[in-house]
Image: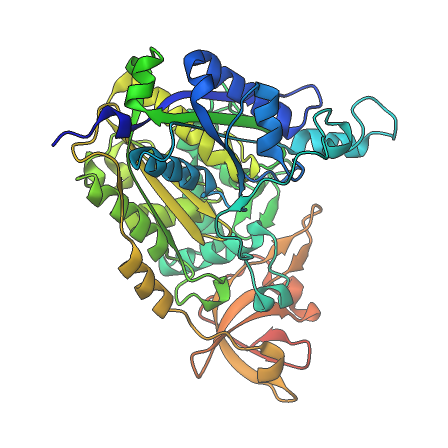
Length: 506
């Protein structure tokens, strides 16, 4: 039996925004993007019953979705804001599609934005100067009568006590740890692996160069990405600056998800792109507890489930956008998908977070908006992936230019999730383990971080004890200089003391 058009979810309209010069706030950019989307389908305005906002890192106040709705003249019955995580945009689209397929929603506006460039700029200005101040202080929409938007999603923190104790807080440090595992598995030094990563990421810059909303619309050669220079400094081995997500952007995006029937009534059915399927999964939650920090069974579970319920294999998908905050996320995704990188398909439709821009949790909404436009023009199917925290939370979505044969489906990852959770390694408290004696461990993942002047500043590791438990460790200060450029994965270290620091066994 054919699915009723009232139950077929589609992306009916999209919008994106960017600001390079003036000082703006995230809600300004979200408003611009949402207005653009709604102007494409004005008849849908009155049907928007849910406004979902992607979590804003640069400051959006307690009720960004309600404030956005008021700016747009909408009267939704539900406003909500997501938890932290780059998987959130796809998760929200899947949630909206399920609600529409179940007859629980008519039209859903999903929006997000970041204004880190403007926020950084305002901090550097003198008090009272034009543009100075915080977003909450200057936003004319501030209204204490608006209650806080309900929070939706998994709000667990991305790191635990083990990571905090070793100074593993910044994404660039944790992702670099994952990259070290991949480099060692491939038998490469950090320098050799960096050269290979330049080859992997250069095609992303070519896509960004053609995207009207990209932050860095400039194609670069592999060597421009991999060679360490004054303007491409080493950040955390093996990553130089041009391989890292760029957060200092002002970008916004919005999509309207509704039913095919509503899109037809609004006169925009010919522009509709169909939501085929979605699926979600998590890796072992804390990085120190992962048995192999260089692989992602969570990406495999989410993408496999989404593709299977759509009746597709990876070779059947015409367009891809793989989350790309750092190169290891791309490498893990291609391995999880069994994707042949030489088959000619670009791995991104935007250019990725280091080149298109990394607007906090909202990047994947730009990918969905861009994928929608691409499928309108070319037809076929597309796969979008998003991830949150440290390759932790995963959401995958399949889209098509025509309806899915079986209607909207949600991939079942329950069994796969139980299998992933069962692989978690016990994490030991390094101080309790060490006590007054020296303890030996084998390094599982490692990086070496550098300051702006090139000096080595830290060298955190995850290491495995003889009994199989794992610990996160910072290095003894006297060891730093000798570790520059060195991948410690597989080497032995010793640590001791109430605030344990490791030394490398010679």
